[in-house]
Length: 271
Image 1 (spheres, rainbow, N blue to C red):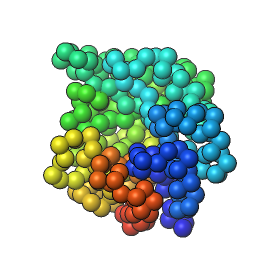
Image 2: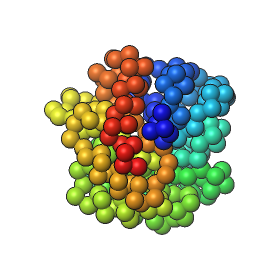
Image 3: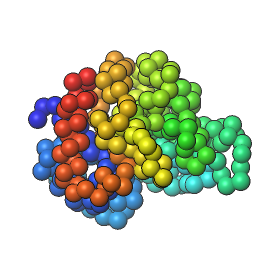
Image 4: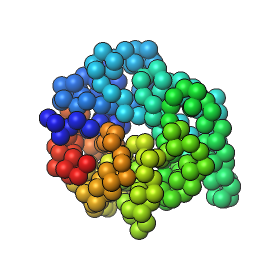
């Protein structure tokens, strides 16, 4: 279907699928792109994963994840992630910034370390032709996953660097609540490297990390956000990225089919 031309399955949405399963599922469903995660790629073997994707004719919309600049990952590991992105055929590495180290309450200092970590990756990324996509995260994750909490904060870091190398992720789950989000999406023109969609559902489950719903299951205005992203010039893939234990228990092929229908109804008309 032409409406799926920019639709991408982020691997976490069908977490039970291996790389091989996810690739086969995308082919069967007519989905043209996939967002890969480093852990299942490592399980498959980098060369094997790259061959599976290439043989299937799929685009790799992004690789997740690098980052965790505040103590969770080394510079060397992030450079390795850049090399993996090249091997897999994607030029977008998603960066999860990292939160507060254990026992640390200096969030301003954490944000400064994140900015320094991004800066240290700029030259290696440019050399490899990979772009660094900083993902701002909802404030409830500021302590443990992402001290960069708004699109404005992510852009403040990105705008210190070449837009051909450093940009941002617009993830509906993380940014929908922000009263300044539409203005910041407009400011991000030329720097949006990934658009990820999932819904904000209530009540939140006990594990907030697993609190995303498929588009249409919650409170997010996908029309407004998608129109803003399109107006900012984004022409790339739209990844459905859902972390939800109940979704993961469903047959993955059914989840993918459902996600594709939601894309056609809620997102594609506004691209």
